[in-house]
Length: 407
Image 1 (cartoon, rainbow, N blue to C red):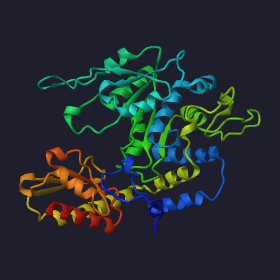
Image 2 (tube, helix red, strand yellow):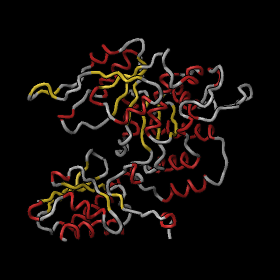
Image 3 (cartoon, helix red, strand yellow):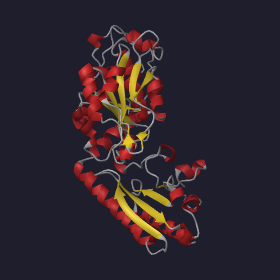
Image 4 (tube, rainbow, N blue to C red):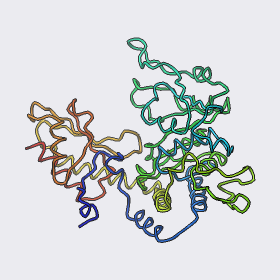
């Protein structure tokens, strides 16, 4: 009996991908073992985060880094750092920003539920550009550089950019290069949400090398770290502000306080914040260690081999269902170097059942299998490969998909 059976919770096969509500990406055994070992010791979390900063800096090319409790927390902490800097009084007042610069610029077409993480810190999001995606029949409105420049005022503290690879021209938005140009010209930080952009592994360095100020990345998706872990990397002073607003600083005597100088420059501070805006977003020592082990294991050679293995697993599923009349299959990658996906296109009249019905049969199976079914109204189902870590799971998915299609 595993721990979930003991709790009366049913396990499932997550073929939707890294989605949080289904437990994210599965961790590898080395990461799990490291977290178990970390749980048996006590350490100073500021020293552990200082060590994490050195590792993240080496891998990303940023001056410093920090392990957060997920990419959403990274966005909140990044915003808080831009709002407060190393000003302890401002840290203590957040999310009250009524008397300080508090505006974060964002392309109108980037607005989404995740930007709530930015507002949590006390920022006011200023929309830039036009809300409609099409101006005329064959014309797409893309927010221009001058529109960002026109929106900058004395209250602007940052620009937020939610990065998505440009695949569909109808979804075109202003390029990150253009936004970075504006940020450098006006000396305004740009925060990049790159939560789902790994793999490919080169994206760990891409955005910093482009000139982005702060970059947030999920640790529980393509990196295969703990689900509640994330990475924030950027300039040393801003990462120091993040640390100060995230750690437990209450009842600390400033005179005898000895933070790691590589993480927190005490000489630049007038005091210590009392439970900053990010206090409830703490990352445990186990999560920090697990994230770092997963991150260091993600070498270019390993990433290439892992992706080849995932291709083979999807091909095994494809072979199982290709013989079914009314079914077309395709294995692709959304971005070069990313994890592959398996698309099943269904001729519903031939099958006498809809894609939505197939998805429901998979969810009702034993074990339940969850696939990407947003395109089911168009006769398509998609299987993500990231959680197919074993031949056993791959065989189960292939067999149950075959039965659902044939039955």
